[in-house]
Length: 70
Image (cartoon, rainbow, N blue to C red; front, side, top):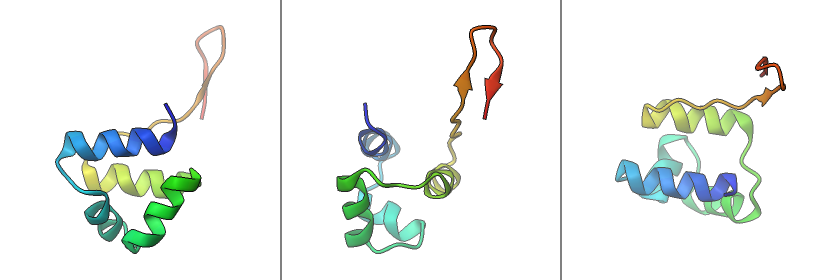
């Protein structure tokens, strides 16, 4: 599942439209929708999304020994 697809699912599960999410992260709905279409949402934007939706966002690599590289 792409990041854009994950954001769309998160919106559905949170009961919020993509347009409202865009406004909450201080972007225009048109700009945000274009980023989703191109799958070019930045790490900073992902952190903003997590904050406004009160969810946790984690991105890391997991080594075979269990260590995480964030």
